[in-house]
Image 1: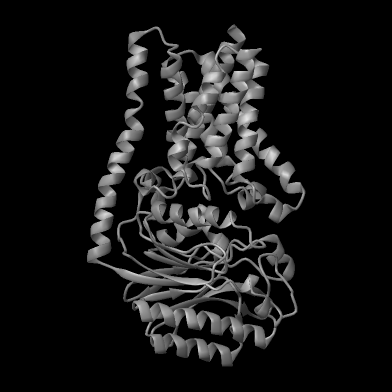
Image 2 (image 1 turned 30 degrees about the vertical axis):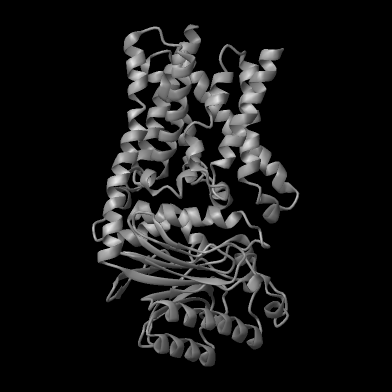
Length: 495
């Protein structure tokens, strides 16, 4: 009984370590060994005990990671958190069973392959890909040295590497292998995360050099208008699922004034080549008076200005990123592609997937809006069309939740590294970011604080492997999983 109680304490420890590694807690190093206590606890347990121990870990991990769900789904959010934990638990248990049944040198890959494949699958299934944006690799979002593998494999490669490292450490501690050759092989696998970090360190040295030699300066605002009672009192209180709508001229003008003041402060601190505001839908493109003020502001600040607007055509309405050049002339406008249910029920339509890129003297620019960061294919296709920079107005408020903005911000970092895109993102509540193509945030705002940021980035011309070939590693891992599953099931029947 004492041993079993101790095993559950180890499982609880793993759950806590894993959620502390995720965004908003940001102790990313814990992910590399956070599951080790659980994996040790599983030794010599029955299948049922293993299942229960794994799910204790995964439900705690899920609650700590998805704690913002109730802000979106009310009471249902707690049930969804339990469901997410059971999902992870199911595939950790499947991977463990496969490893046991295969009982060969390559069995050690069963759990990392199984978990990372099903983690990837949930990002492409229609319902889950919208809201289930957390993946284990996001634990590394503030450690750019570990992220460089994303430009080749996408996030699945890093998820696999994190799970593999946990399994290897646990196997070494348990010392289950009697064969000397197997022990040497197991120890050698620890070289993979080390080599990944060394390569990343070399790349980040190049990153530092390019920031100094080829700086492009981006400013971004956090206007906090969704939490400003003075601003909200000027409107009717309507929402479109992702924030309050600016539906009176007085409200629109107030939002413009707030961002205008923040933009002027940016220029006073340092001249910015681009300034990005948040996703506040403060003006309709048909509103000539405010649009002229907006253009005049860009000209007076001598900067490329990007804001979120409403673009209405004969039969459609788009949530649209709108860019004006330093001369006050329009450069381009791009509708949001990944619209949410609340937006669509209000009347917004998803934009066409033509992935238009705009030429500027500083590089080719893609415009995107908020949730477009979450679907890896969207910014990848902009990069495939030649984009070197992406400017993204975002709204991560969700009723002032202080945790969610970190997960959204981690998506922007991942998209930057995957496609070697320089990214500037403004926000209504935070986090505003300036990101280099290698994933370093040279400027980052606080959450729920009205402020501005200024940071330097640079552009790269060569497209990454991931940009050109997409999720080819995810498909490869899926094939490997199926082969290992067949071997496992065949051995199960023999047993």
